[in-house]
Image 1 (cartoon, rainbow, N blue to C red):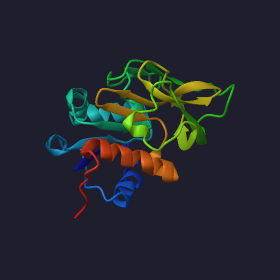
Image 2: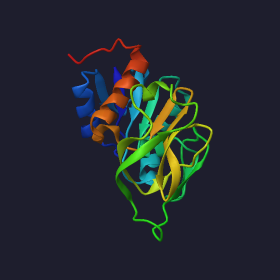
Image 3: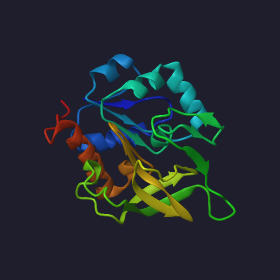
Amino acid sequence: MIAIIDYKAGNLASVSNSMDRLMASYRITNRLADLDEADAIIFPGVGHAVPAMRELKHDGLDTWMKSTRKPLLGICLGMQLLYESTTEGPTETLGILPGRLEKFDSAHQKVPHMGWNTVEVQPGMKTHPLLRNIPSGTHFYHVHSYFAPVTGHTVATATYSHPFCAIAARDNFMGVQFHPEKSGKAGEQLLRNFLDLVYGGMRTTTA
């Protein structure tokens, strides 16, 4: 079972619809007991970092996520909250990935960055399991005002005036800045790759 974290900031309907299309067993939850039972975690999100972190702390989800060894995929705000801090607020975030989120400069481009953008795979990262059957230069759908820096944990980048981290990974933690659940066949392939990573290609289905 995949646990989709509900912390009042998630794009839950579109993510759960994607899981339905992939016939994956999932549960939308903020209960620690459900997370303990899950095989892996999807951490979606839209909105503002400050109330999102407040809600995570209220439910004890922040501590649980920092210590889990289960595969975890952050989406959009969910990826951003994996970093150390953000200038949105500003606020400290989970600290799983090194780096600080910055806001795009509205003097140089429209903010938020919204629409389809190409994602370029970093050298040496083409074999990452999330990228199976997804070539460098594939388009994904983005909606965000803040961006993560390019670091040693960056799997792929996108460019909006300057490069930013589009896919990150560290140990069992993975994150995508774009919305795979809104990115057509390429996004569905990425979510399928995550499920195959979790289940070794042997996925459970909904009842």
